[in-house]
Amino acid sequence: MKKIVVWLLALCLMLPSFALAAGMTAGTYEGTAEGRFGTITVDVTVSKEKIEAVTVKEHHDSAGITELPLSRIPEDIVSYQSLGVDTVAGATLTSYGVINAAADALEKAGADVKALRGVDVPHAEMATEDMEADIVVVGSGMAGQVAAATAADQGAKVILVEKQPYLGGTLIIAGGYLVTVNGAHVDDSLDDSLERVVTYYKKVNEDSVRQPDYDFFAALAAKTGSAIDYLMDTMGVQMEVFDAGNVIMSHNLAHGAGMTKELTDYFFSKSGVALTSTRATEILMEDGKAVGVKVENRSGSYNIYAKKVIIATGGSTYDTEAIKANNPEMATIRLANEATPGATGDGAHMMEAIGAKMGNGPFIKSEVPTFPYAFHMDWSNTPNPGDKLIVNAEGKRFCNENPMLNYMLNTYLLREASPAYYAIYDEAHTDAALLAQIKAIAENGGKYTVAHGDTVEALAEALGMEPTALRATYDAYQDACKAGTDAEFGKDADHLIAYNDASGLYAIYLSPTSLGTIGGAITDEAFHVLNTEDQPIDNLFAVGECATSTLFGDYYVGSFSLGLYTAAGKTAAETAVAEINAK
View: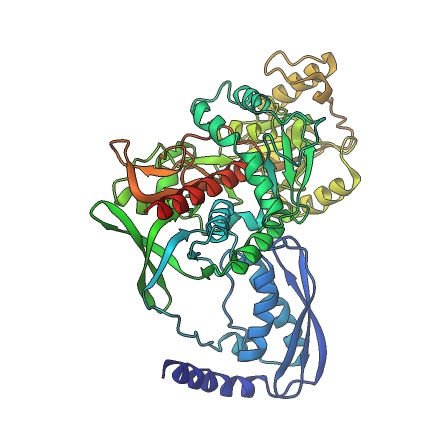
């Protein structure tokens, strides 16, 4: 009966929309609008009375996370004859880009675009009956997908729960690099020893205020190679292996989006069940043991009962209250976020509610600093400002701009807690393509994008700084560059490049950026969640970003998350299956 009601509702909503579209001039029209990383172009074919087809011709947005809005939104516009279709959570800018590009085309066709935006679309009922499984995994990022696929591969009945409308979590927009220790696919000429990785990790964290648990880190890092071998040999995940200079990495050429597809394909091939647009709200407990999770979708709530529960909900980037409480720099900085919007700390809240031992945090997990949105760049193509002068809002230099790891620069920005940061560029030492972007943005720019000054003093005034302060900083930096020695912050001579300010100077606004968070539940090495007395909570595991309090210090290291989370997901799943089979 519910299905009939929904169908009738859809029909009723569609009938007036045809009238709204009537009067168009038949044909195919091109429309454009801005997406996340540039212009989205669509073709819209119409008859006199209806929208016949919407086709995305060109876009520049990230692979993986954009696939759903690029396919579903055009289908929905045609199905419901509406521009009021739902956006896809986590891909909002791409979603609006497609909708607005279609609106642009429809306006050219003579449609009443305002009216079409007001046409509501129906939502089909979702199932709300209780379910049962051997293992329920909550969250479908790297750790969750590996845990679910591993458990399913070993014969367990697995339900994977994801609150976003697509699987993949933050993995789907990740680079797909995994730190690798003692992997079978690593060439014998490469040093993938645990000693090398631990030595490097300790070096990175020498001045970290929050020190990792190196024994816990080493125990997990030692498992990365065999876990990645398992993904490659058993699940068909494609990897290339190379020496990244300090560690060995395995890399999926299709990045995180490719890994997501390969892992989910394998999971489904093993009869795994995935529930999207479904949020876990509570860990169900009986006699001190986890027995499942309570979930909700747009139609209601229900229970999933399971012998083992694996929480892999990711971090707390968008848990505003927790972030502000644990990161005092948030009172002054303007933070950019690279994590997907699903990272709202759900797992941490659920585990804390049933008495789990929680680490400090959540703390901001540093990405590389971000250029303004107008550049349409992300972590993969943002220039490294290591050979530039970087100043705070007062025009003062405060750090070595070229530390041993570019993620460390982001942490320096967080520590400084200034309301603004700027990287200074000149025309003589800037790549031609980047310079063209800088000039174009500077034409209508300002202190939060790009500013230009014919002199240092003019640049300072454009940024709202005291000119004498920026001049003193600039002159001192120029002297250090000419001398080849940075006595103040120890920047290496190769990156001390004196400015040529004959054509003036540009200041690009830099945002400290969050890749996620560090914190969450405390676990043992098998990823059983511990209670406040340091005893395992029966049947409950936590992996990935919601259980990283002991893995990271102040500095995130690129590729370490995905490698460690792969090993954690596999370990938790194997332990859970073994415990089920032992009973």
